[in-house]
Amino acid sequence: MILEPEGWEQPKKILVILAHPDDPEFFCGATIARWTAAGHFVSYCLLTQGDKGTSDRSMEPDVLVKTRQTEQRRAAAILGVRSIHFLENPDGYLVPDLTLRRSIIRVIRAERPDVVVTCDPTNYFPRDVTINHPDHRAAGEAVVGAVYPGAGNHLYFPELIHDEHLEPHPVREVWISNPHQPNLILDITPWWNQKLCALHEHTSQIGDRQVFDDRMMSRRTPDSTPEAPRFEEKFKRIVMG
Image (tube, rainbow, N blue to C red; front, side, top):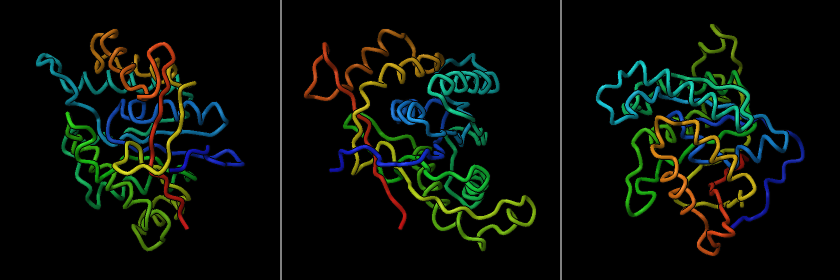
């Protein structure tokens, strides 16, 4: 198991590509805070509108979309994120098809990141009491397929070159958040409160704040205590050869 820090000697451009508003903060918000504090440049690309993220039957989807985008911008600002791309696909219906892959390649070629962060397309059951959202799995599959081989190869979606002047761009690293089989664990305890503050901005999603905070505190490592909690975020890190 790799326990050392990233080992980057120069600032990196990092693009976090996930399914819903609030996914970056939940999946890896403390790591994002760690990166921006270290001088790295982080941007988001969110693939869906989050228009089904409510149990309130009086909530209109278009109102929810605007609310969640506003919440996401506020949360990202707390973590030091530079910019957000909202692709606005319908929540819950994400399919890792060629249309989605091309949309992701478009953003990768525009942003030209060194590192792409996404989620695990193989992780169906993250814990014994939950089933992973199908949008999460679809996002992971589409992003991995966009990174390789499409983003760096001029023969994939050549119209992006001809019509939009978006040249191929090879991504150097992929970090899979919440992976089924991690190979890297970061101790992100110093940034946990910043992650929590960012999550508090997602008021439409977290419910009662005290109940939410108690639930998040329960994610401390088993070897720590409530008085001295320690927190980790896990990844599968792929360094492209």
